[in-house]
Length: 272
Image (cartoon, rainbow, N blue to C red; front, side, top):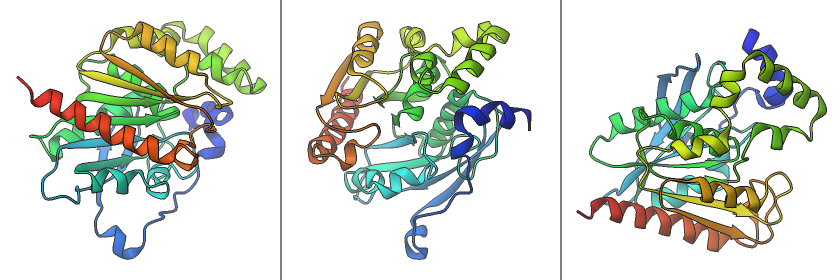
């Protein structure tokens, strides 16, 4: 209950009862996944197999700060795109969102826990990640932990520090400042622009940003690229709002880029 109260100024509006966008027939394709996270939350996810004869990898999708939580990827065509192109797909709710129980602010622990579960489901295939906004920011913190299983990742619309996002929201920003004073070590631990310097296990990274994004800037992506210790590409679009590239004029180029990156990442792992 304490975590729920503290988190309310930041994500309280989005912690609502989850409504599945899947039909009863579509639900047959998806296997429910439950995993305990060190954040304290019980994480709920859905796993679906690739629609191709052979699969290349398992991709875990980390959702933005939206009421639909993991349903964001179902509603916007990400899961169909990946499954049609040979990738097993695992979507999940961060703790406190969707069907997952509430835990601490350590959303990076949810990403590690669900990734480890993805590896257990299909042990012989590599595990990749695609996170957007909330799901991107916290993935960078997760990548600094040697226990994470991801070998390649797309980080889309990630903010470089919490302060650079929350300053637009006065009450949440003041609360963030208080929390930083009370927990200085934790504040340093989740300072995203610093954590990317400690990225482990990744073979490559793709950063995606939009010049029209009103909440995060391409300059943030440039800073991440400069500080990344792994081969990193920055790919940008001109005119997409925050977390809405899939609904923008760049939709088809965006889809091609996602699949191209994942295909190349898998091939590079196969090479001796």
